[in-house]
Length: 252
Image (cartoon, rainbow, N blue to C red; front, side):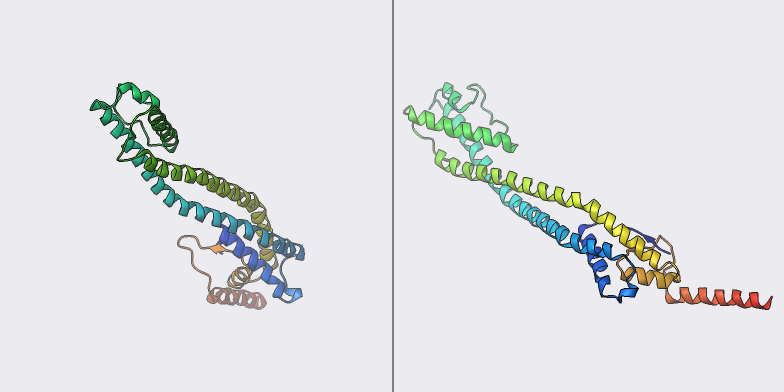
């Protein structure tokens, strides 16, 4: 007899619950499980199905928005980095005194671009660059161009908005995932009780007949490596062997 294994995925769990509920269509005296378990399955199914659907929906949204987000991050990082390079070149050419870099939070003697590889760093440095340029211009300085701070700000603001939205998506997905995880144990325990009842009801059947009856009720079986699959012939062979044994007993 192949071995039994509880569902490993949420879709398989939902399918098992639906299979259990479908047993209500059987003649009343042939239903192999207590009605209380079927009633419980009917109560669990819509709740668990809704939780799984909500999680899948928020996860798919998060994945979709993540692709857009990465493009926005790339643009914001490019513009902030480019602006800092242009500022450094202006200082090196003598157009600005190097001390002006302090307004941007930059070291006057360091002409490298700050590390912008993380989103958090991009948030911080983008804000510093925008504020610094506004302060310098307010003091009477000529605005830098190629890129202008207005162009930098457009991409920076888009990035920041999406950065905040991304956290919301992640929190929503995590919350729904936790709700699904909390109910999985209850669903698994119910499925286990249903399957135990089904197998107990058909315990006296021959292997293939028992396998067929239990599978119809939603029990999931797997064959071990190299194990022979059950067929109608399996039961026929057993019946012949039993008949032969019975015949020998009468002869004795």
